[in-house]
Image 1 (tube, rainbow, N blue to C red):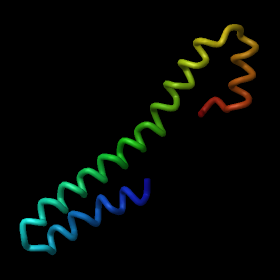
Image 2 (image 1 turned 120 degrees about the vertical axis):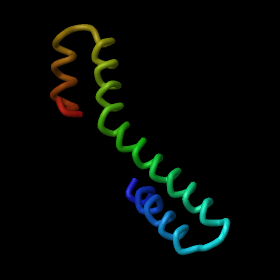
Image 3 (image 1 turned 90 degrees about the horizontal axis):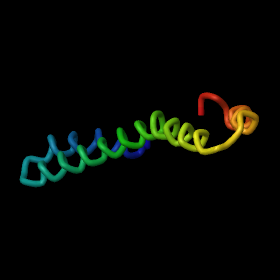
Image 4 (image 1 turned 90 degrees about the vertical axis):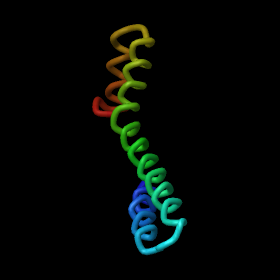
Length: 76
């Protein structure tokens, strides 16, 4: 994710330096990489929790859910 973020920030800088039609390609690549980094960050913070809740809803029994929470962690 850090590499995508770095590429996303570096591409517009390169596009600003290059004074030709390739500038827009660099801007587009920068936006693409930044969008990918933001998507990965969003999934790592929100998507995993939604998946955990979906799995826990399908597991029968309170004891199993309590074990899952202890094994994986409540803030997973």
